[in-house]
Structures are given as C-alpha cells and as structure tokens.
Amino acid sequence: MANHKATKKDVRQSAKRNERNRYYGKTTRNAIRDIKAINEKNAASDKMPSVVAMIDKLAKRGTIHKNKAANLKRKLALKINALAK
Image (cartoon, rainbow, N blue to C red; front, side, top):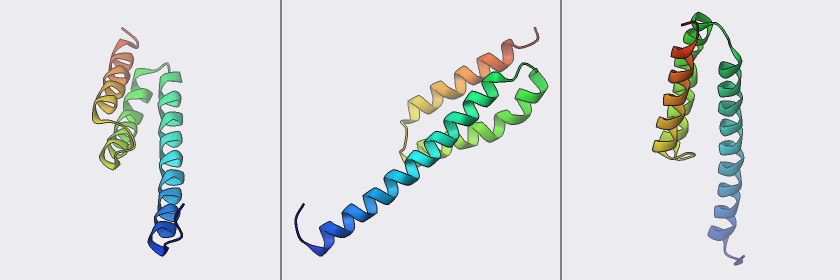
C-alpha cells in the first residue's frame, strides 16, 4: 500500500463498503431462506414484496448483478406460486 493520504482513505472507504455490502447481502440471504421455509401461500405472498425490495436494492448498489437479482426473484415467485396448488 502506498503511503499517500488518498490511498489510505480509499482503503478505509473500501473496507467500510465491504462490511456494509456483506451485512446487506447476508440479511437478504436470510430473508430469502426464511421465505423459502414458509409453507403457506398467503404468508409467503405477504413477505414477497419486502424481499424483492431487498434484492433490488442489492442490485442497484452493485452488490449483486442485475441478472442474479432477476433470477432470485424468479425462483422465489415460482416457489410461491407452486405452493398450495
């Protein structure tokens, strides 16, 4: 690492961003896991908008790719629609 003030600041900033991205990513993964564990269609449908919003925010921030976000949302929707047929 270079001994420039700007470089040291960049290291601090990237560490902070990395920690924040890890937190939001883990929180979203936990929410996805929880919604997959629900066996009632109504309960899962009620939680779906909040989980979709979390996934969209991750894609908007660049934490995950937009196609990964689309795939996650699609898989969740398919799982919820398959419940209680």
